[in-house]
Length: 152
Image (cartoon, rainbow, N blue to C red; front, side, top):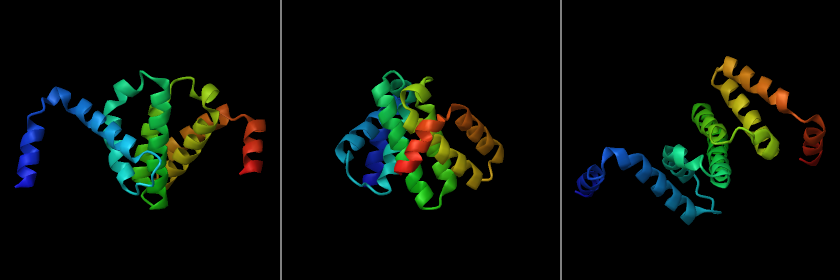
């Protein structure tokens, strides 16, 4: 009975508003769970939020926050050896970064490109893995990277 009620309520939402509904639902869940280890719920939150890409890209701070959320989901999928899911969340994360992300968010861009290249390789997406590696190598700041590797 509860499923039928939920389905009926969902069907009252006009199709044109469903993406925005999913996005706002994801944002609400994210704000409730922010800073907590939510386990696999991160996949639900990221998936819902990803429906709002057009609203996310209007604000750089929001764009970076949700790119990091997708990166977390991607890492969690990698930890569970679900490389295809990881690849999809990492792609979403990269798509949320603005054009100048290498200059303004070098560390995030570096981590994301490294992770997605590995996930692509694990999914037998060798052309994409090479593409990410080539892009990664073009942007790598050798001094900064060596410092990061020394610290990590």
